[in-house]
Image (cartoon, rainbow, N blue to C red):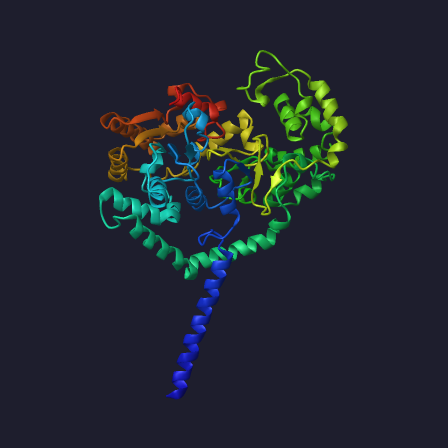
Length: 522
């Protein structure tokens, strides 16, 4: 009997010890910043909300990041935008010329539940609603088979707002905080969060990121691999190894991806299907014979690429522009006419030796996952202080032929992003109740329908499987008219005479798309 009691005591003690160790581990690692530790996302959120631009944040938990941003807001936002990645390029300057506080809270793969959760976070944390809410509504928001479940990262705010909408359950902010705190502390012993923290530690150890912060473009360009690449050696590499070789040698823009995961931002590049293996090998062999900033390297660039090379290497003062747009501040540098191509090549070639010891111009944080920048002329993923984004150069300045290939690949995929089994419109009642709740609380609602690339759109619409793209748009137009809601945009790019060159791929429009749709500004 005593033996059994001692065994039970030891078992209970061991269980409590294991629970304590797991709790301590989760509390200290805190990869998602749930317990408010000063991790990289918290630091990035504070930098962004203090008016700084940050670079390098990719493949993050953007639900957590938006939560941290809202928590750290220093001003009362007048206008917010919520949508998927198709809305991420919506900027303050496009929305209004007046001095308003605007923030873009768009998330990868945003669903209706995300819209509700972001608004709920404002009510829980700051006890107010912005005066205007712009909802970027992709057609698959109404597809019950869209596969979007990432909103659960903001579930507590979603549930709180749902109760506000329907007047049930959580009727006070204090009750909500109790519930949210209970959910928060349960993460100490949550199995999934423990696994997430373990993976976080493993990634940090493997990549040794804390000792290798991302470099500004001018430093990256001077650490390019200049080894001579032999074709026979490259042919022995797997597709993943070849992709990494291209990226590591500064030639990521030469890679062409194929297959259904080609445009999926959540799939690492080296895991995607390589569509141009033979061409890539030939390109790498050829380029390896040209050292960075050598004449043969520079002469291969077109004018736009040469301008970006000069800017990225800190030699913008060597550029001379010509033509009627030379002095126009509203025209990006890379779109202007280059008046001194030959002289610029000679200047950059002559400076190549000096560039081997570049000056540090960007402020790096102690943590390697992001760094603060003061210009968008950086070859990295950038978030500006209004929450909108700029892609790295390989996507920001992608050529039109590649855009066309991406658009075709998107539309002809077995299941284009979140459009699989789109057989009916769902979530209609919840969508309407959410908009009604906002309007009842004197919030102006703007519905934004992000257009598809015309190539992708035409291919999708000719397939009866995707007829609900048209049905969803008709529903939204009718709903907006009936409820006096402002609607901007269209899934149909032809309504705005948009062309392939106005897009980054099959679904993401460039800045000019947003400017065209939102003119005149508020």
